[in-house]
Structures are given as structure tokens and as C-alpha cells.
Image (tube, rainbow over all chains, first blue to last red; front, side):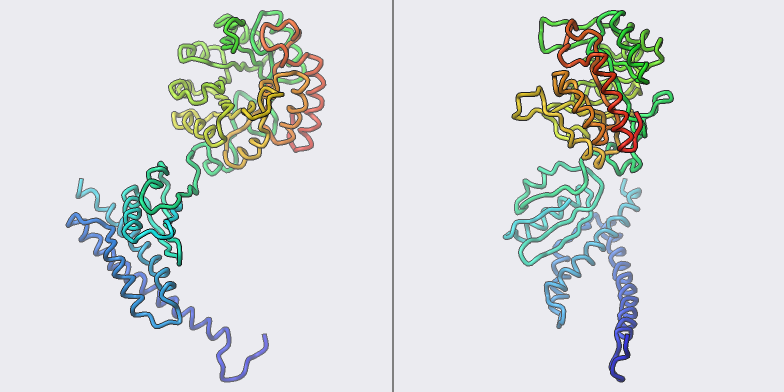
Length: 103
Length: 336
């Protein structure tokens, strides 16, 4: 592909930046997930349900309120629904591992 | 499965459905659209869809995976090959199972079996416990019939095939019959299927005249779940508005079952058509469509047969049909 105007970033430059951001997202997703796992263990100990619809609604409200675009609120909501789905899943898996203690 | 919520479903209703799904052991993929919220339920468990359809705010529930597991293609992507001695059902060879509708006497069995064996037919069929729709008709020879079937088949180095109708016949079938057929009426006789599975013999499950393909494969799953994986599905015609033939032979079931299921499928054109002149065309079509086998009624003297002479081929008709089937089989990369 022909070189673009000097001084302007190329597609490759932008992709390098996206790759960097993705790695950062992976790190953050896992850090967030670790928090969810810890909560899962506590819930288990206290006999609380893994599914907390109120808390999930609060998470969505927080992130959409903080959003300043260019993604619109609906897009942010859909992205975070997936994040929450996965957090709920891993909480379930982790909780089932300590089943023995519950009997 | 996917749950589509009503356009005006409230958050409370959605939460209640999610909660139910989680309690059933599913993981949820929620997607809130501008109009409809979709809930993807991920998990391998089988659930009664109606339980979810009844929840408030649910528009519809769509099943993604089939309600049967062991009979599904995914369980055995290569396709099940049922080995009986050195014969394989579900392999390259199209297995022809032929013989009279019912065992009448030794002369009949010898004459028919001799001719079939000369064509390389490996399975001799013969009914012994006929449950004729005609209450006054010939009801079969019972154990004597099965014994005769066995003796004649052994002499011609053939396997035996017969239809079981009742749990009380299990011991006899265990003793005399290699391939046990379950009639269309008994496809859902789960008490019989459960006991039959314990024998561990190949079972031919005939699709009921009013049963869907899915129901048929669920019945197959039942036998497999009870420990017998040697199940062969048989298409023998379904009930339609057409009255000219006894039933409508659903040849479309062949490629459909091949795709959905790992089980071999055979076709019985005799029973479906009910008239011998209509049997060869449908037998040819079945092989062309990919059937793994055929069940064909053949009688040396159909005009004097005790039952179902009208749907039995004469020996000469069978000779001719075999020659034709050989050509068709090779055209679809099979052997006869």
C-alpha cells in the first residue's frame, strides 16, 4: 500500500495502538474477574445467591452514566452485559468448586 | 436455547427468567436490544421448554440443540456402524433384509431363503407373532415359526430378523433372532424398549406412522440410554391425506436422519406401499436416496400367502429388483 501523508498515522500505526489497548483490556478484564471470584467465595460462605440482579443493574447504570462516547449508551450496555455474563459464569464455576464444604 | 422476551417485558420479568435459567444450571448471555431482549441459555441440559414459555414476559423459546443426544450425529460424527458377525449395517454395503411377511411352513421358508441366498441376501425376515389388523386373520406360528426361521436361516448361513410385540416374547427372541424389530405401534412402548435393550442385540426401530423424525430419534435415544447402542431406524411410511397407497413413504427422512443422526436408516417399501407393483420403484428410490438397507417382503407364492400376499414380491420380481439395485448402489458409491 502507498505511504500516506507524512505526519499522519497509518492503518498499521492504529492497529499497533489497538493491540496495545487489547492487552490492557485483557489485564483489566482478569483483574475485574478476580474481584468477582472473591465476591463469589464470600457469597457462598454467607449463603447468598450468585445472581444479584440489583447489583448487575447498578453496574450497567454506573458505566452508562460515565460514558462520554463515541460508543452510545446502548453499545456500552451490550458490552458490559457480556462482561457481567462471564463474571456470573466464573462465579458459578468457582462456587461449585467449594461445594464440598456445603454438603 | 434462546429466549426471546416480549417487546414490553419489564426488567423484573427478565430478571425472573434469568433467575430461573441460572437455577436450571444454565449460563446466560444477555443481549438487550432496542426492542427485544434476548437471553442465550448456554448449557447441555435438556429442559421442558414449556416451563420457560409459561413465564411472564417470554415471547418465545427456541431450542438450538436437539432433545436427543446419543442418537445425534454429533455423538458419532463418522456414523454408527453396527457389526453383526461379518456384516455391517451403516457401512458401504446396502443391507437387504428379505423374506415372507410371516413364517407359514418349511417349504415356504426353504424356497424363499434359497432364492434370496443365491442373490447374496444375508438377512432372512419372517414374522412369528403377527398382530394383524384383521382380528380373524392368521396370527403366526409363535415359537414354532421362530424356530423354523432360525433353522432355515442357519442352513443358508443367513441372519434372522423378526418383530417382537410383547415383553413376554423376550426370551424367545433372545434365543432365535439376530436382529429384533420393534413395530411402529411399539416405538413408544418404553417398557418393551427398556427390556429389549438389556438383550444387547441390534434393534430396528420402526418410525410410527404419525411420529415425527425428532420423536423417532428420541425413541432411539431411549434404547441407547438403556445401554443398547445398536439401533437402526426404519422408515415405513407415514400417515398423510393420500389414501391411494397405505402410507406415504417418507423418503425425505433418509437424508434428514443421515444429517441429524449417527444411526443407520433402512426403508421398508413393502409395508408403506401395500401393493407389490409399487414396491420396486420405491426400493430403487430408497437406495438412490442413501438408505443403509431395505426390508422387502418376498413370497414364493404370494397369491396363496396367509397374510399380506398383495405386498409381497414374487421371486422373479425380487431377482429383477436385485439386479437394478446393484446398479443404483454403485451409482451412489455403495455396494449391494
